[in-house]
Length: 122
Image (cartoon, rainbow, N blue to C red; front, side):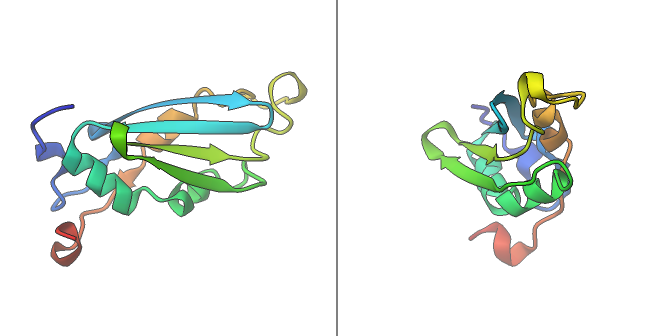
């Protein structure tokens, strides 16, 4: 984990990729995206701004089920699990990415808006 928290500064907009790492994969018709923050400040910001609803909006039209966010505080990370999301998954799907391997890249490209001063220190 980095000691420098400057990229997680709440005063400016950032892409998730500026303050975190990600990896994604599949199990049957479900995919998951793991996001690990680069610093404690980044983890706090992601906890406030990278919600299950935000990720569900990103994958609107791809996910027929639900998106659930699991906090992993000991790892300063999150695991997002999307059900009914791969058009049957693996060998059943005709989608370009039937195994969800590129979905972390999509989450990492999300932009987080600047946080208001009153919510930055909560």
